[in-house]
Length: 262
Image (cartoon, rainbow, N blue to C red; front, side, top):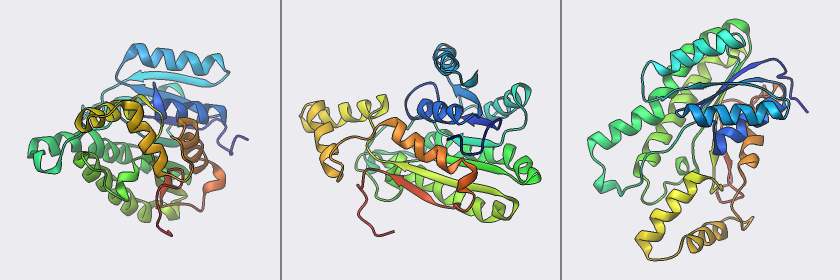
């Protein structure tokens, strides 16, 4: 199932590996023309090759989103290759873990540069054209930390919540123009990033990494870590034509970890 996005132009941030790559592969499988973006030219090239080998339409652009000019270069590259972006998936690496009382103003500012400001820049650059065309999808990948802050991850807790609040406000203003704006909040998902976090917890608590993974898996009713493609499927649906009535939501994809009713 393509979801009605065949030929659409999609930008996917942080998409050379992990969740971002799974999203890029999902969108390419639905027929979108995907621009893969990551900091490493080598990893970008490898990701592009992997999607093309499976018949998907993909090209790459190396960029570091902490550079204020990078989003404009990425958007310009997408236009050169495929046309005006119809879909933007804002995604990237997370900030370092630390206790809240250890975080400095400089730490928070750096996390803002990494997590919040790139989202605003991409929104500013792409939403006007989406509104003018009467169709668009903007999705940010955040974390379950926006619903319940995670210990030792104050920077992610604070700034991913800020992304959620910002995009909720944006969604209200563009919905009548056929543009949906949503966030996806992954739970514990088997990626390299989760491995780094597990290693930090293992060192702090004096246990093995496998014990950390097992503890996380046991917290959710599914009793396992999620797979990147499961999160990507949710993002792909929100980008589809069928999801035109879903906007302004923070969708948890967490294996039932969150226990709230809504």
